[in-house]
Image (cartoon, rainbow, N blue to C red; front, side, top):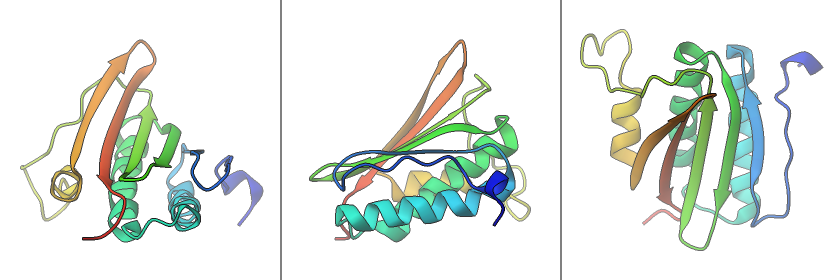
Amino acid sequence: MADEQRPRTRSAPADAQLETSATDPSEIAATRRAAAAHLERCGCTNIADAILVLSELVTNAVVHGGGATRVCISCDQTAIHINVFDRRADPPRPRLDNPVIGGRGLHIVEHLAQGWGSTTDALGKQVWATLPRDRG
């Protein structure tokens, strides 16, 4: 993978936060891999669900929000926290119009996450989700 296709990534000790970005569709897979490696180092066991939620939020940011300008993944003793920032202030809305073509992402997030939501500011929005740290 060429350097220009790699998201900028900063990883800290296992209990800390990973920060990266994905402003282009070609960076989404690398963001998923970096997040999975970080959660594994943290000792989380709910990695598959967390990566699916992360992938949906980052893909939405890239497709609908002008790119995921910042992606933060952290974990504590009970939860995995995912925060995705993009450039559009429009709140995310689950779509029901044509789930065959797309629009299932936020429904997946709702199903897997303990909670999710969004906040907006002058720079865009932050969409967050919290999942259990470990599979039950």
